[in-house]
Length: 309
Image (cartoon, rainbow, N blue to C red; front, top):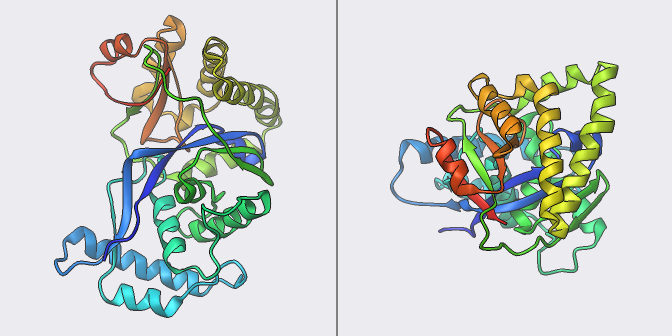
C-alpha cells in the first residue's frame, strides 16, 4: 500500500502576522513530499513513525468535535496495527510543513464526507478544511492555524486575507530571469512551540503590537500584492523593509550565526533574508535579484532554489 503524495509548503509571507489576522501567502514546495505506506520491512524510522501515528490516532479519537473529526477510525486503527507509517522526505523542524503533509494524508484517507480539490472550493469549504486541519495539527504544535495541512492537501497557493477569509490563488509563472526566491539551510532544527511562546510574550508589549499592526503588516501586505501581480521592482523594495523590521524585532527567532549575513544583505542590497515559518532554525527564506551572485556571496551555505523571477 502507498497513499497519494502530499507536498511541503512555504509560507512566503505572513509568518507571525497571520496569528494576528494579517495577510499571508503560502505556496506548495514540490521538492519534498510524504505518503502513507505499509511494508513488510521495518526500519527504525518507519517504526518511530508508526508509533507516532498510534499517538496521533489516540489524540484524534478523543477529540470532541465529531462534526469536523468524522473519520473511519476502525480502518485507521487496523492500518496502524498492520505497520502503516508516513514515508516522508520533508525535513522536520524546518518550517516547510512536515506535520502538515501528514495531517493532509490522514484526512484524505480516513475522513468521511471529505471535501476534495475537485469541488468548487467555496470560502465556507476552505474554512471548514482549515478548522479541521487546525484541530488535527494542534497535536504537533500545541496551537495550529491549519494552513500548512490546507496548503499540502490542496497543493495550490493559498492567499490568506484574514482568519476567516481564504482563497486559492494563482501565482505568476516563473521566468528565466536572474532573480530568485531561495531557501538557506541553517542546519539547525527549529521548534515551533518555543518560538510561538516568545512571540506571545512579546505581544504583551504595546510597542511590539504597534510595530506588528503597522510596519510588519503594511510591508507583508505590500509584498503579497507585488508578488501576485508580478511587480518585481516594488517587491524587492518592500522585502528589504520587511527584512529590516524582522531583524529589529524578531532577533530571538533568527539563529545567532545568521545575524551577520542577514544585516549584510540589507546593507549591500545583494539579497534580503526573512523568516520561513516560526524561525529558530530550519530554513531562512531569501530574495535576490541575482541568484548566481548570491550563490557566490553565500558559498559557505546550502541554498535551494524555490522560484525564479
